[in-house]
Image 1 (tube, rainbow, N blue to C red):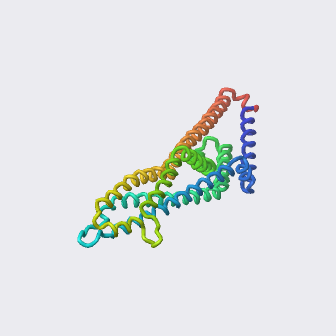
Image 2 (image 1 turned 90 degrees about the vertical axis):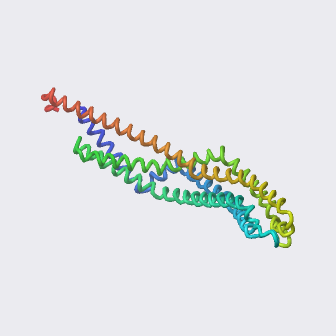
Image 3 (image 1 turned 120 degrees about the vertical axis):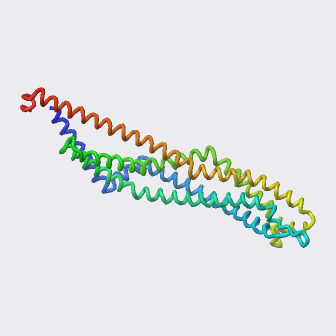
Length: 308
C-alpha cells in the first residue's frame, strides 16, 4: 500500500511539473510572479540605479571642472625670475581630485552595467525557470523508473544548480540591489549629498567664472607675482577640504556600487545553498527510508508482498 501511495504521489508531482512547464513556456508563470511583487521590486531598483547614475554623473562633471582648472594651474608660472611652476604647489590636490574622478567614473560604469544586468536577468528568468522545471521533471521520472541508480546523482546535482541559478535571477540579484539601496539611503547618501554640495562650493571659490572669461585663481596668479606664499596657503587650505571630500566620495561610491550589493548577494546566495542542500538531503533521506522499508517488507513478509 505504501508503494502504491508513493507511485501516486510521484505521478501527481510529475503532472504538476508538466503543468508548470507549460505555464512557464506560455508566459503565465512569469506574469503571476511579477504580479506577486517582483514587478514593483524591479521598478524600485531601476529608479534607484538611475537616480544614483544621475548623481554620479553630476559629481563627475564637477570633478572634471576642478581637474581641468588644476591642470591649467600646473602649467602656469609665477612670472619671470621665479622659474617655479605653480604645479609644484597643486600637484597633491590634483592627485586627490584625479583619484576621485577615476572612482566616480568607475562607479558610473558599474551602475550602468548593473542596469544592463537587471535587464538581462529579466530576459533569462523564464528560460532558467523552464530549464529547472524540465530537469526536475526528468530527475523525478528517472527516480521513478530507476530508483537508486547512479545516473540520478548528476541529474540531481544539475537540478540543484539550475534551481540556485533561477532563485538568484528571480530573487537574490533584485533583493541585493534593493538592500543596497536601503543601506545607501541610511548610511552613505547623506555623506555623498553633503560632499557634492561642498565640492560645488569649492569649485566656485577656486574657479569662479568672470565676465572676461578668466578663472578666479588663474587670474589671481597673474596679479600675484610676488605673493607666492599667499597663493600656496590658499591652495593648501583647499587641499585639506578637498582631501576630506574625496575620501567621502570614494568610500561612498565603493560601498554603494560594490560592497553593499556584493555582501548582500553573497549572504543570500549562501543561505540559498544551505536551504537547497537541506531540502534535497531531507528528500534523499526520505527516499532511503522508503526504499529500506520496502526492502524489509519484501524479505520479512514475502507472502504479503507477493499478494500486494
